[in-house]
Amino acid sequence: MTAYRYRALNPQGKMVKGVLEGDSERQIRTQLRGQELRPVEVAQANKAESTAPGFRPSILLSRVSVSDLALITRQLATLVEANLPLDEALQAAAEQSRSNR
Image 1: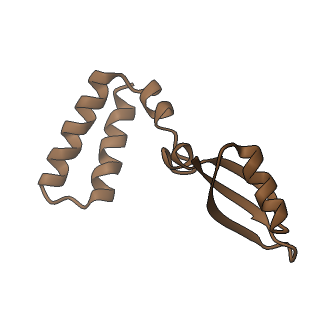
Image 2: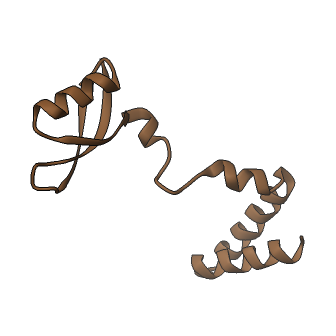
């Protein structure tokens, strides 16, 4: 059996979240309906946890070459090592990266 994360609406219209084990998404949806819940989203738990909502690492990596990424990482490490606050170090590294394009 596989773990599935779900989001569903209860009879009062409130969104509820949880994890159930089952053989398929269809089985999980059936279980939820049996609990008087209306499934909104059902997905395998390991797939849902692999990335944070809204965060897609492939977008970042597709826009930055490996050598540029290495350079930015070294610059960021140097700035943080010099006790520059992280937000300022990130801003400086981002500005430097933009000016190199």
